[in-house]
Every structure is written in structure tokens, then in C-alpha cells.
Image (cartoon, rainbow, N blue to C red):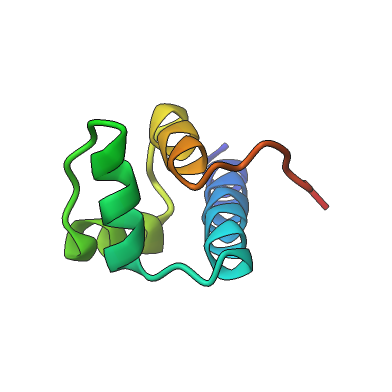
Length: 75
């Protein structure tokens, strides 16, 4: 089961990084956007959390909302 978890964590991390790259956003800019929706995260904390890929689905949705992401490509 743990191998499957790691696989999906890697996919979630890749998805979030890809959306950041599409918008040319740094961790500093994402932190500012998150602040705009009431979420306090430092750029360093974002970098660590996203780098590990072990964030919650709620965090993923917060980031996507902060980036004004309205659709995702999962492939």
C-alpha cells in the first residue's frame, strides 16, 4: 500500500508544480496568493510541503483556488 501512496503523492506534487509552472509562479508568489484567500504559509514552508508531496487534498484545493485554476489535466 505504501508504494501506491508514494505514487499518488508524486502525482499530486507534479500536478501542483505543473500548475505553478503554467502560471510562472514562485513559492513567494503562491504564498501571497494563498494569503489573499486567508491561508498563511511561508514560501519556505510551501517549498518543503510541496517537495515532500505529503500534503492534504484540502491544501491542494487551496493552492489551486489561490491560483485561479478552474480545470486540471490529470494525464
